Image (cartoon, rainbow, N blue to C red):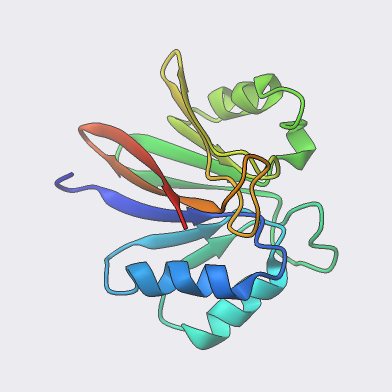
Length: 162
């Protein structure tokens, strides 16, 4: 997508550095922003040490006990706002209603969360909702991450199996 930013999104690595490293290696030569959605603070630290020049942003999850990362963050591209969080503080294992309300209150076009270990792409009345699943183990089997393009033309989400 012309003029878009590319986001490479991973979550819930739980110490599976091999998978997070594999994702970085797949996309290292692309102009992109890497997002880690929590439950892998140690993996994020290791990636930052190994790849000091990549743009890697992260939030903390419920298993990141000593992380200094915030529990949620935003980024903007043109008129599109992306809100990302691990999701545990919004009860995403039970419902995404509270998360969608928070995203809409922030004026987000896309909300991204982890925590459930279940990959999901959805669209609800102007709001894209994405969970990349887990890079270590999904509830549905296998491992996954997501590639998202955000541009003037819109938002394109894609879940990738490892």
